[in-house]
Structures are given as C-alpha cells and as structure tokens.
Length: 110
Image 1 (tube, rainbow, N blue to C red):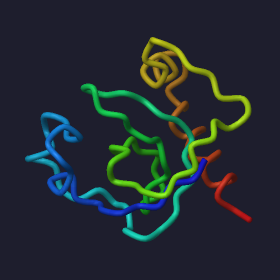
Image 2: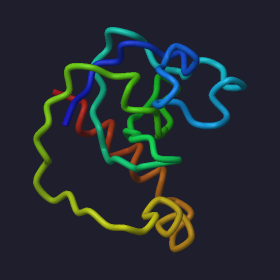
Image 3: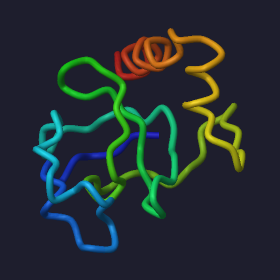
C-alpha cells in the first residue's frame, strides 16, 4: 500500500485525529506531496497510524490523517491482531523496527 503525505504538522490535523501529545509535537520528517510505502498500520489512542519510512530513513508511525490518496487494498501477507505487534516484535527482537525500515526501502524502490 502507498500513501501520499498531505501535511507533516500534527497540529494541522482535526482534533479527533490527534494524539494527546500533538500540541507538543514538532513536524514529522515527512514531505507533503511525496508518496510513501506503508509497511503496517496501528491504532494508537484511537487514531489510525501508518508505519512508513520517514525522510530520515527511520521507520515511523504517523497519523493516517497526514496522508491522502492511499489505495485501500490490503497487501498480500498482511495480518491483523488485537495486540500491539510493534511492542511485542521489539521485545522479541530489538532489531524489529530496523527490519521494517529495510523492507520499506525495498518496497519503495522501482
């Protein structure tokens, strides 16, 4: 799945799409107008987030409302769960987010 960034400022999001720390958050290292490969999704504080590789090369959860024009198809191999996979993956293997970042790079290359 791919998504195009529409804003990198969490304060620009509607209240119901912001998490509690949004008023203290600085801009995300994302570029409006750029299309990002989505490696996963998570619901944090009742807000849907997308796992993307940010402009610094790190895997990062960003509110889905920061993006537009994403295709709604579920990529093959995706699984859904009611538990926190990022935390459980990180607990099982501290390199988990690095793996996500590497896969994002692979997915975004033509």
